[in-house]
Length: 223
Ligand code: TIU
Image (cartoon, rainbow, N blue to C red; front, side):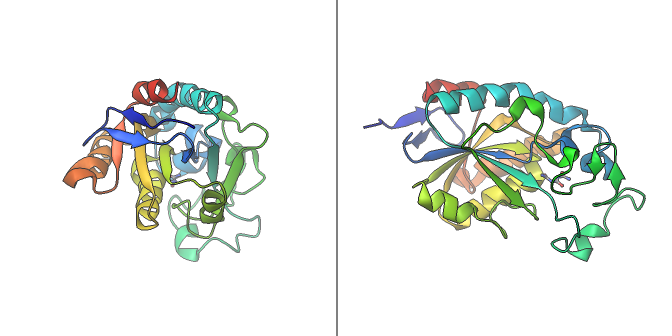
C-alpha cells in the first residue's frame, strides 16, 4: 500500500496519499504562452509565463514516474462560438478577439494550433485532457466525474494564470471538497504582483483555499 507523503508547505505541512492524488495542469496552451495568442490579445506580455515550463516539465515527469495521474486542461471554444458567452467574446482588443485569426490559428478555438498545449508539456497517451469554456476547470466539464471515477481526493495544482484560471479552479475544487496544493513555481501570471498576492491568498487564514509549496519539495515527496 502507498504510504502518506508530507510536503513542507505554507501555511502548514501538506500530507497526501499518492493513491488518491492527481496533478492538474491548467491551460499551458500556446494561446497563453506564445506571442500572437489570446493572452497577448488581452494586452499582456507573455514572456513571464515561459518560466513555468521547465519546472512544470520536471514535476510532470515525477508524477508520471510515481503513477500519479496527470490531468491537463485547455480553455477554449467551439468553432461556432456557441459555448462562448457574449460578455466574454466582446472583451479585450476589438481587433483580436476569441475566434479571430491569430498567429497560431483562430484565437482560443478548439482544434487550432494555438489552442493546444505547448510541446514541452504535451500530454502522453492515456492522460485526460479537459476542454473547458470558462476559467474554472469544473464549470461545464467532466472533471468531477473523472476525479470520482479515479478516486482522487487531493489535487496538485499547476498552470496559468495564477490569479485567473488557477484561482478559479482552486476555489471551485474547495467547494467540492478537494484539498489543493498549489505549486508556486509551476503557476504563472503576467503580473508579478498578482503572482505573489495570488499565492498569499491561497495560504492565508490558515490555508483558506489550500496550501502552497515549491516544485522541488513536491518532487521530493513524489520520489
Ligand atoms: N487572462 C488570463 O490571465 N487568463 C486567462 O484568460 N485564462 C487562464 O488563466 N487560463
